[in-house]
View 1 (cartoon, helix red, strand yellow):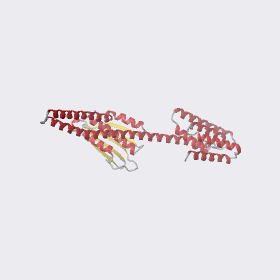
View 2 (cartoon, rainbow, N blue to C red; view 1 turned 90 degrees about the vertical axis):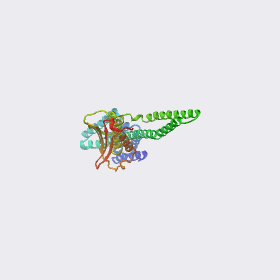
View 3 (cartoon, rainbow, N blue to C red; view 1 turned 120 degrees about the vertical axis):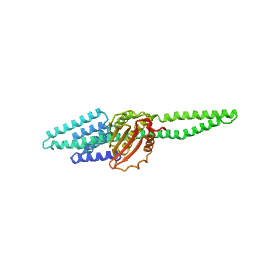
View 4 (tube, helix red, strand yellow; view 1 turned 135 degrees about the vertical axis):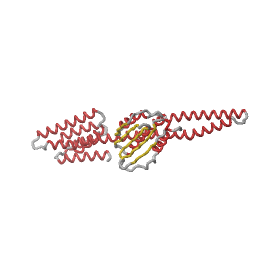
Length: 352
């Protein structure tokens, strides 16, 4: 509903209630103007508008719509302890005034009815506004986390492509130039070929530096998993981590990086596809391997086909390069990402 339409609806609703109670003339007009001003200031001064609504409610006994709207906005804007104290104090004062009025008025309604009205018209809107604000902040943090993971994944993809394509071509140029250097060439051409070979080697060295810069975020390893879990919890995810067996460091840097990426990918997928669900990370040290598992309940909406994402495909290659195995188990109730990484570098293979 547009803002002006909402203001008009609240003014008409609360003014009509007061008119039905017998209020007419300038008093009713002033009442309507005050309700309109409180609604107009609700977005910029939510707590002031809520306090004004409580004060008007004490004198008029009405303001049902205004209390609900200003209470919801005040709950939505609560961000500090001062706001909580201010709102709770005003609400407590409102309750006390209502109870005193009930006790001093003969034939008035029962106190529990007044308390029920306070809960429905003020406490529930405040809690609803606070809940909506927390959910929006939770979604914002989730989107920021997912966006950061996507940026890192894109950096790694670019680095991988540059290493595979340009590195291979520059290596061929360098090898061919070296072959020409030892061939029967005139001195001037031999010098030119030598310069070409040197240029190719220099270009390969610069490419290596660029690739290392692009893969600068690939440094975290097994020891950084606790920090990764802590950051996910700070972003609003419900993550528990458990370990079993005798923990030993992964001496192969590739395996250590792969372990970190497995947990990172599992957390990212869980946040993306099963937002709000509990996530379980387990590290199980076997005599010759580390077993990593990231599990979360299956989302209600169906997942895309397994292996269709570039994240899992690249992760599979990373784990395989470290001599390990990666498996995805989309069970009927639990989605589980499982990886096995060797503890001994020799088992990881000779090529990177």
